[in-house]
Length: 111
Length: 114
Image 1 (cartoon, rainbow over the protein chains, first blue to last red):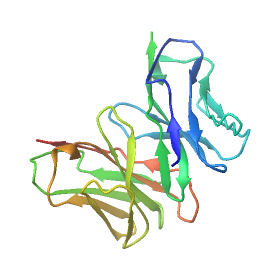
Image 2 (image 1 turned 90 degrees about the vertical axis):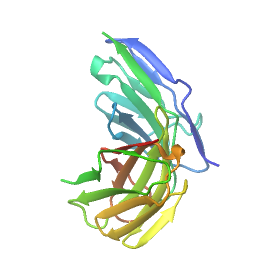
Image 3 (image 1 turned 180 degrees about the horizontal axis):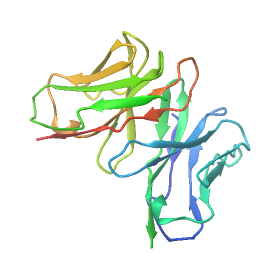
Image 4 (image 1 turned 120 degrees about the vertical axis):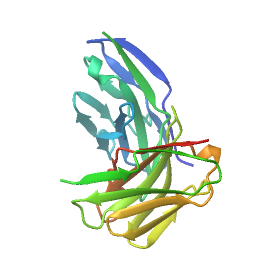
């Protein structure tokens, strides 16, 4: 079946560092890909999505590019802030009305 | 603007007791509605979805059931709780219509089963 893999369980950076969180997927065709962010005690918040090869999604300084060749949708940010500390989830649109979620990556920003 | 409300905010329940969690969406007609479960420190597992009143599809049951009695209301329930039901329950909505659209989440209900 379809799946999403986030290899980093946790990433620790200092403020103003460059961020990459890896997301790879396994699915046929061109599934929709999503990034969500979840702060402690809250529901996930939608960041952005992409649906076509080479399409870039972006929001709040975060961005990711849909790559069909490498089956990836890596999240990046040029300069992280302490307020970016949260758990980030990559998700895949498996079929109508269903999302497959990655295991999440906890981002820790050291002040 | 759409708002999503979940109740209760948190519950502590005994094993074997019944449970009912609610979700209400305001400001959007005929939304698609979803229930998710998240173990502490874990990822999200979609449980149910509904695209119209009275119709609910199961993704993973986990000995739970769901109903949609009104266009803007989604209920998650069980008659007998298990320890494994502890976790964070999230309701989400997406715009009506076919296809896979972005899902927007509520604040969640935290459940502890003892």
